[in-house]
Amino acid sequence: MDGPIPQLDPELAARLRRNADGLVCAVVQQHDSGEVLMVGWMDDEALRRTLDEGRVTYWSRSRREYWRKGDTSGNIQWLKGIRIDCDGDALLVTVDQSGPACHTGTRSCFDTFEVPR
Amino acid sequence: MDGPIPQLDPELAARLRRNADGLVCAVVQQHDSGEVLMVGWMDDEALRRTLDEGRVTYWSRSRREYWRKGDTSGNIQWLKGIRIDCDGDALLVTVDQSGPACHTGTRSCFDTFEVPR
Image 1 (cartoon, rainbow over the protein chains, first blue to last red):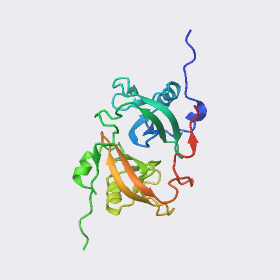
Image 2: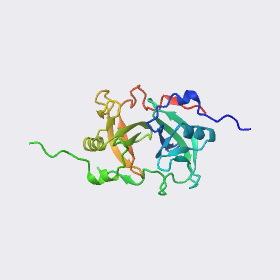
Image 3: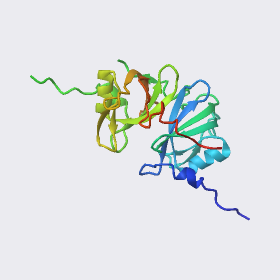
C-alpha cells in the first residue's frame, strides 16, 4: 500500500546548482523583523520536506542525517517562503522562529561575535 | 621598501572554520532595511581586504580571483559590520549597497524566483 516515493518538483530541482556534496546554502531570515537567524544546508529531499511539511528541515553535514529544526530543541521554524538566488546555489528561507534559533540559546546564530573594526 | 605582507588578525582567523576550499559563506544584508542581498564566499584574504578597505571583497569561485564588489559594475558594497556565526563557517556582512546587488540588475540576488507553495 506504499505510494510513490515523494520527490522534489522537477522544475524546482532543475533550478538548483548543488555543491559537490549535493547541497545548497539556506539563509534563514525571520519573516517580519528581517533578522538573519542562521545558515543551514539542504539537499533536494530536505527542501522537499520543508515545502511539504511547512517546517524547515536541513541536512546536517556533521551528523550526516536530516534534521528538522525544533524536533529536539522545541525551537521550530515555521516556513513562510523560499526564494532561490540568481545562480541557484543559495536559498533565502523566511520563517517564523519559535524561541532561539541558535543551539547556544541566542536568538540568532550571529549574535555571538561581532568583528571589531 | 615593501612592508610586511598584511594578514588577517590571527584571533579572528582562529574563529573561522573554512570549507575544503578555504572559504566561509558570507551572507550580505542591507544594514537599514534588513534585506538579504546576496551570498558570497570569502577566504582569509578577502575578509582582510574587506575589513581594511571598508568595501566588500569576495573570492570568486568561478573566476578563481578576488572580486571587489562594484569595481566593474559600480555597485559598491560599503561595509557596515561583520558578525561570525556560532560555528565559525558563516559571516553576516551588513553593508550599504550602492545600486543593485545582483548582476541581473535586481536589487537582491533573491528577487528572481519565489518557490510556489
